[in-house]
Length: 319
Image (cartoon, rainbow, N blue to C red):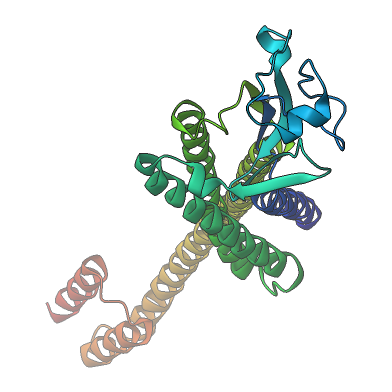
């Protein structure tokens, strides 16, 4: 039983540690959602020759004379660039079309005013989710490595299961709230940010993977607690049944012993009474009376039938 409990505890600790690592990674990264944004192509210049609008005419003249009318034969989607972007809880980063690298801005500032409260609730829930995971992980480690007795281990196990379940519920709520905020921001966010197409990224997958590991750890911990309690109850029931059977056996033996002892005492008392009565002559009634009282006191029998026997003997001797 101890080996099975230890294996279940190790599995629960491993799942909780995975959930903690996944949730922390997802919280600090910016790949919850990713996709492309459609932005107008910039004008071609000396430094930029590709992915730009090349107007007809002399480029140098076009750059110096702002009154010249520019013409471009590109139409439709050819006039736009589709730049890559990725968004997390804190920041939204998009590809910089004018230079190498990326430029990032706060996602909290991009969210509509009506959704900022929900977004902050999501952030707080994520923080509480990670903190409760840390508490559950600490309790599981204490139960695994520093538990001196089974009862203390069961108490730590129960508290760890409660904290882990609560953290999983908070994580689920936080992920759902962020998803709602992002979808609203896609429709009502700034024009220069709205995505043309998007999908969930690997950070989002890590977040829900963390929730899955968290709930698996809580189920494993509750299963370990329940199995240990059931095993103890079963052993206690078997012990009580064995004790009852042994007690019944001892009671029957005691009853049999006292019954045989009582029968032997009665037989011995009867023999002594007869011997006493025969040893006294009929003329010496007082001797017989004292003999009968002596025997009654010696046997220490207070039953009604025995007293009636002595009284009948006394009446016989008196008359």
